[in-house]
Length: 497
Image (cartoon, rainbow, N blue to C red; front, side, top):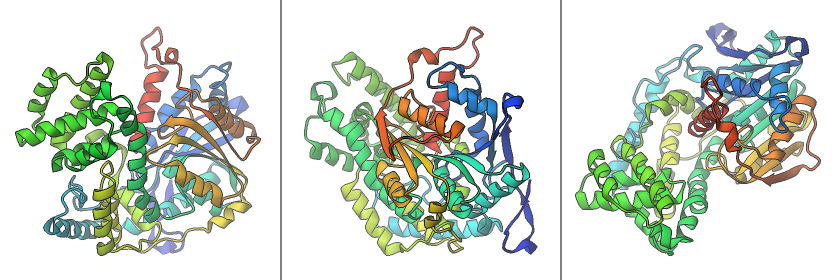
């Protein structure tokens, strides 16, 4: 569709905004439309909505957990407005390389290195300003495009499922258009009551906490299997002392005990050899016994093999991740939506703090901050979140352990908007909850809410995480792509978006 560049200045012209639609499977039962935003910022629904539509439309109506997904696909069009700047509409692109060039400002803290990061960030932000679309890419414009699409489709209200950054979008829409908000589900919740600067600043702490819970403590609890001892301080010291390139490549990617042992072991090899060539690492992996436990040894070996690719590639996103997240659009939203109060001095202090306290985190928060404090436009209008009180209740769902949108931030959003309900999948580790497991309280709550507007009895509730049954991962008799393959791919894309 054609949309105004700026609804407040119609004379500036227009641009093309793409839409994706998966039509209701049973037109005779059609009841409306559900809009989606799958996150990012910079995530494209072209990469997500087809898989979601496939999963929902192929469920059995009789399944106790998945039947509601089929009913939703039968009764509702599934629609996504492609955020501005992404493929499918008028493109936006920063005309210079990303500032960090794959390097981490918390690893090498030398003054000359820091000066280079500051210089590169200024150049990158200036390159983004060369594209005249840069003031017109953000959540405000995306929400206006969603409202235009709702009107064009003659929908009385906007029903919505938002994941990750999509929760920021959903809350923004409900606050900006409270009388037009329908049934809104927010999955893996950002703290939409805060700012992007606050969200980004919390990431190193939350990343370290997730690493401790998911990787460090399980490894320390089984020293005979993992072989790194029982002293957490000693293990953290080993992380801090990893060779720079190894720490950049591996430390912030450790999510399991096996990955922890693989990273520490190979970091020692890199230190001894003075290099980290992939063929050399693979040769050493082949002949090395990581554990006396066969299963654990296999898991560590697999993790080590996976890590060898990033040793040479560094932290530059692989082609698949780069396709899933448009970083020009990401920066335009993160830097342009809300104010940034930091400066180079405070960001240097943040880099030093992360390096000393959070060795399993990365310096992404610093890199983003350096870009955003140099961003060429100021923050955009944003509706006060107090307006959410005028909208219908929203349903929030959350994994207990989510490294991208942690439970603490979700609770802040939940506390700031009193007409919300939250369901937590206890002990679930992941990003993107609905449809990714067999956790009954989540699957039923979302289905019932979207179909009938039924909310949980308690404002805050939850149940234990239940993984999807392995039997649901089998291919069908014709060898076509099975549910498990599609779900795994969607889960991977959500993690990386």
